Length: 170
Image (cartoon, rainbow, N blue to C red; front, side, top):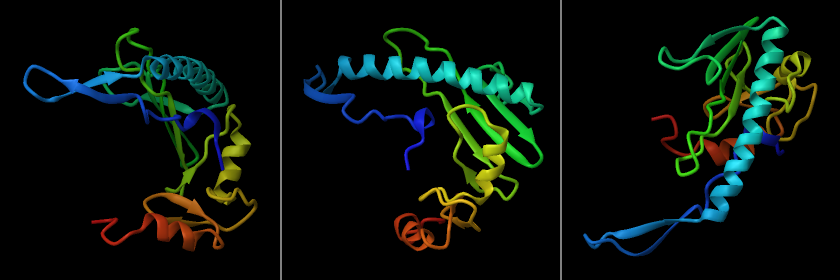
């Protein structure tokens, strides 16, 4: 399943090595075209994250900053009825800096992950408890796989094979 903006498209190909610096170390060169695309994607997703957070607070979620040194508009924690949402919506620092990744992560009262809907929807979050994080089946009994993944009994074996390799929790 693909879940919209909350899973970043990633930075594969953003950096390559080209030649050597004056100390003989490989010189890193940034792919400017990809950097611009990622910046636009992340700016758009930050606006979505801000809108999402504001809708959740308007719906009655408690909000607090994640860190003492950063405003809750940039790094926040939402809680309600045992559900926890962590979000990042930091501003872009500048055209030559690293572009932060707007994120939303949700955990149900059972501590297992719930995929964030594109637009805030309290009922969709509640339904997430009975939704397989792999195939999207609903309503279904889910179980823990890996650290906090939520899967149905059909998807759990393949997900365990992929995630719970020997030593995965050491």
